[in-house]
Length: 321
Image 1 (cartoon, rainbow, N blue to C red):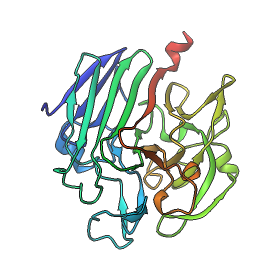
Image 2 (cartoon, rainbow, N blue to C red; image 1 turned 45 degrees about the vertical axis):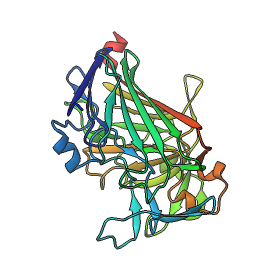
Image 3 (cartoon, rainbow, N blue to C red; image 1 turned 180 degrees about the vertical axis):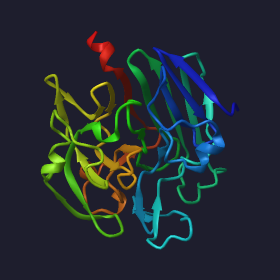
Image 4 (cartoon, rainbow, N blue to C red; image 1 turned 180 degrees about the horizontal axis):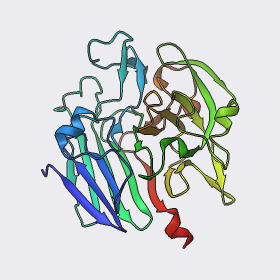
């Protein structure tokens, strides 16, 4: 298995480290990096949620690392010390994947889970996840396909800890960046960062996330959870996020199957903004909600589901010229 995979196409270059959670850690267009530069698998593993597109399966937090689904109790092994008693970020972002189907502008990262997988006792389902990355002049296209290879229904929670580098332009400031995100309602969280069961309408600062002028990604310390609701761009419904500083733009288009967003800016440090699409609400399997509202997806035996997204980087000056 190659330790490092590089693909190129459409003016973009991407680097992936299969051994480091299969993550796409570098996305570059010319001299512009969308993510924190990462030179090795060791560097990626040292800070796996800081670089690029680590896969969260399941995403975010699960209370006490346990839940009941379809009459079965799931118990996830949690890292210690863990004073809040939360299972976080899932199984796959630190485990080795395989690179298959490598072409000049395309590669698929594959993870197969079966009875021999170390976390199978915690999540007793055989499944395959294929994440295909393709570079074109439309940017980075990501297609994640999850197939249930077990004999039982399988709960699916999927998210991406997408950490964009700030500022976008070398001669701009992080404060100059404006962010738009297709957020809908704020999901209220308790002191353990778990949903209280309530949502509320966006306040004025949060409404700006939906407005054409956008909102600063540093307007407050962000570690906030939202439902998803499309915004309109050029009269068309858009599910995703846009970062722009007047010179450069990043467009992050997400599948409507991602029904929630997590926004995190590392205590408003000014060097990154994580815009995280995820299908289910934090702690979804433990919430007294319908699957439609919580976002929890269910795969029948033999069934598969695909989740798509796209990241496009645009130099606005060249676009105007």
